Image (tube, rainbow, N blue to C red; front, top):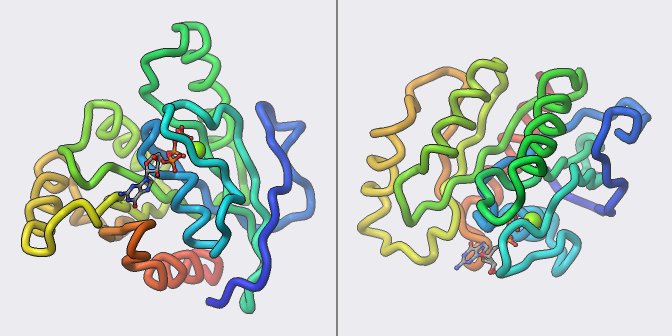
Amino acid sequence: MIINQSEFSVSAVKASQYPEGGLDEIALAGRSNVGKSSFINTLLQRKNLARTSSSPGKTQTLNFYRVDSDQADFYLVDVPGYGYAKVSKKQREEFGEMIQDYLETRAYLKGLILLIDGRHEPTADDIAMYDYAQYLNLPILLVATKMDKIKKNAFNKTEAAFRKHLNLNKDNVTFLPFSSVTKLNVDQVKDWIQARLDE
Ligand code: GTP
Ligand code: MG
């Protein structure tokens, strides 16, 4: 897949604000600060389309990015980071509802890219999100982020740490180490998206 153009389309907190137009969508989820915005910028070859930040919890709405590729046009949907301790309980519940509404009702949704920090074992929040995605029966691309911080010979340790907590031997799951710094496996991510759009 070759990405020709991309643009921020719309922010939404409820269904009436989702874009119309009938394009397929690929959602991105992960803990705050895991590197979702960086992942989007890397994938779309844009410097600062999705705003990155060193203070977690920057992204607080569903952000739809329209992507024009040589194959098909689609939306990438940045879902706010879960497990952000500094928001209030009420805010967290509202986040939860917004995310559930989207993931459970959106017919255009063709797959979920779940980002987990490759430097650490998956957290309880990561495991809960993975189990939830399995319950939703979505194709899942499990991405280990920030792998430039891990020595090549320790990559299998990251995968083992993931396997310890998450069942990766499922037909609907693909695992990929990734780095926005070195652009590791960007093409494999594009291939996975293409396959979801072709399904
Ligand atoms: P929120 O929107 O706040 O939930 O965060 P996010 O998941 O969008 O994370 P973001 O892309 O803003 O990145 C968070 C921090 O991690 C920033 O300081 C990034 O520079 C850094 N980061 C993201 N991806 C990578 C990566 O692949 N390698 C390294 N070394 N740092 C990364
Ligand atoms: Mg973000």
